[in-house]
Length: 162
Image (cartoon, rainbow, N blue to C red):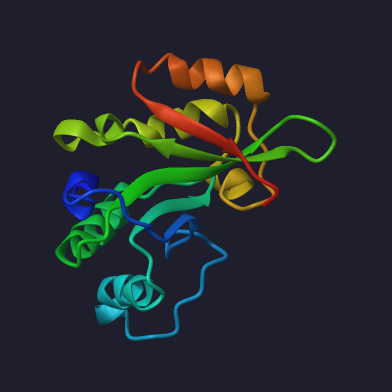
């Protein structure tokens, strides 16, 4: 990944970021272009929009293969992409949408610890029941944070009015 240190090597600088990006793995995402150019078109769109860093945060889903390819493509254009998810937490009357940013440790050494976390947090439900913006986890916010902490890897939750 293009390291943040490289982007700001000569001191501080304003960076335009988008921490709420969806991708082709999300059922609500639309791409009408040629499938052979999906990854490069996606990253080119970020570049044109002036995005310098992004978070892939699909609804209750993480696709490690898609993320790896997007990440590699974006790295070539010096755009760091972070792994994440827009998690629909089962709390309150309508649930709480929470963006979760995962550190690289969740994907270290070719491992994917994000997908197993999602399977655990949606215990007793099938992907068809939760891989959309209206899916609801099996746990409330506090229980979800505890599950995340159980992985002993860095993460950052952000409640959003999504």
